[in-house]
View (cartoon, rainbow, N blue to C red):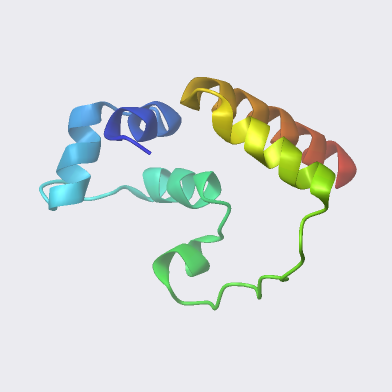
Length: 95
């Protein structure tokens, strides 16, 4: 993810992201929360206080592999769009 992409996702300027990275600016609790949400972690996990959940190692079906290959062939913008659609659909499944 580029600084510009991260800045857009967090709702801050690219200069702010740069300042966070080099330690010139402290990250507010609001931005910390947005970062954790962006990377699908709770704040404890994001800060390294809680272990990450174990990753299930399952093989993808041939069909899923084809979809993954097709996704990789898309531009970064198109990939983000597809991932957002998947995220929305996951949200409906959790209800």
